[in-house]
Image (cartoon, rainbow, N blue to C red; front, side, top):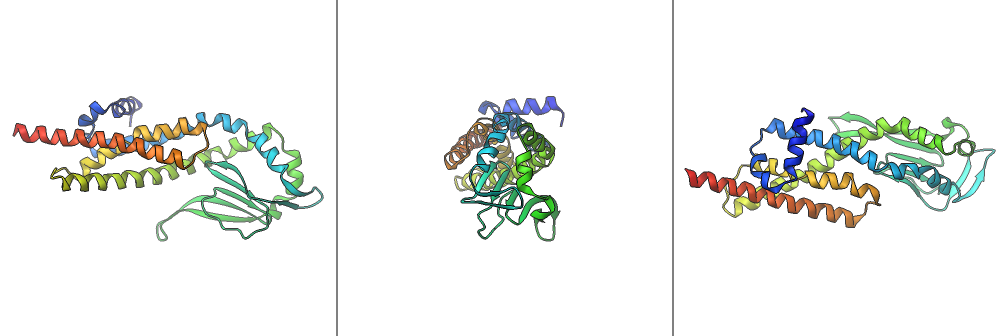
Length: 262
């Protein structure tokens, strides 16, 4: 999709008055717009997260200060709690010695292992990511490494990981927003049919895709400046519900106009 076309659809999707036009767009245009919107949101969210990235060295130094033991002659460190270094993507340091369960962490460091998620699609097992486990001893004396890493080195390491982080974020957002759009599509279609409005499910899907623009961009911009929590998640869904409702009303109104002209 050309950038000019994307910006045209982007601006139109922010105006409820243009939804009647948007729901008539071709399916390939809608798919292309959704994929481009996700890429645009990931890039924008990176720039909005720069303040958090700049604070990363101080956060890691604060993290190191929580160690109960810190033996620079060998790998002997322990924390009294799990430490979340970053939330998006989720990077966790757990040196408590408790049983380790890898869930949604992108990078998990324990006393004995380093767990990372790699993008390795497996259609037979319905998985997009695979957890890779590496023994901590392969990285040498971690505590000595901590003492050598300072300020700009943290940021350099982050920049080296950036392509992988952006790819992970894009795929994660694709799955997340696809599920939300799918749920709203079927809900909107079912409610419209119950109310006696004969709309096609593809039209409801188009309405769900274009009305997701505001929700996605709010999460990519405003929410990057704060710690994402349940309140923000509910607010995001509320924003999407309102815009989707407006798009469905425009869809029903368009259907009524077609019937009245026949």
